[in-house]
Length: 245
Ligand SMILES: C[S@@+](CC[C@H](N)C(=O)[O-])C[C@H]1O[C@@H](n2cnc3c(N)ncnc32)[C@H](O)[C@@H]1O
Image 1: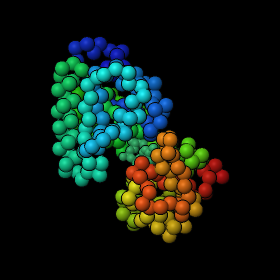
Image 2: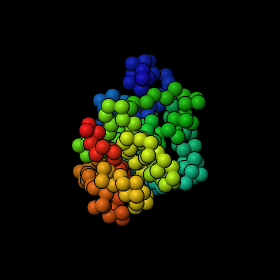
Image 3: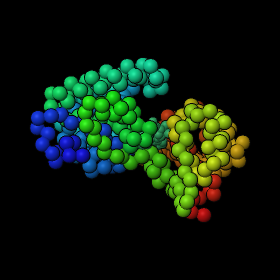
């Protein structure tokens, strides 16, 4: 962490650091993440083709001066091919800043190493540059706090399952665990709800929407309108209903 934090001499060389900015509440940015962001010459962040970057909006209340910004724009539901080209281009842009001796903080919603878009940059950059990472508060823990329900206790096995997985795979993994967090729910909600009901797990599951944001909601599955499930939604379930029981 020396280069990004300024505890090593970085006067002659650039540095790059992936910074987890937490699930959405600007107060859930870590002190270390904030320090790295405030030290950076360049802020890079994922952004939709048009409009605001969620990651940048989380740190916006903490930004007090102008700096170079690099929005990595792509369709939010990108197929792999165009995303590759966008990340390749972003790495070139970041490398240009590093060669010019600048410090680059790459913002990542939640934690960078938990399904973070930063991973695609990390994989490309780390072949040529040392890349630091500041962990962030992940959406899993933010959702658990919002729901007032532990993710796992004792020797529980907690599975983190991407909702786009096919039903047979989800079913097998759900059968094998004590508790689960289903991420990337969004447009997959109805299919996943039907599966959970069939497995008799509907009653011990809840949908958490926009944890930590002003419009946060925690809902029983049967009360959810599938047309109103945004991308930043997670289903938490525990087979005992409450992890501590
Ligand atoms: C690509 S993953 C990124 C996870 C992120 N890196 C983290 O550490 O939480 C995006 C998924 O995380 C979950 N997620 C992220 N932020 C959330 C929030 N504030 N509330 C509920 N779910 C969230 C949703 O399931 C969303 O589809």
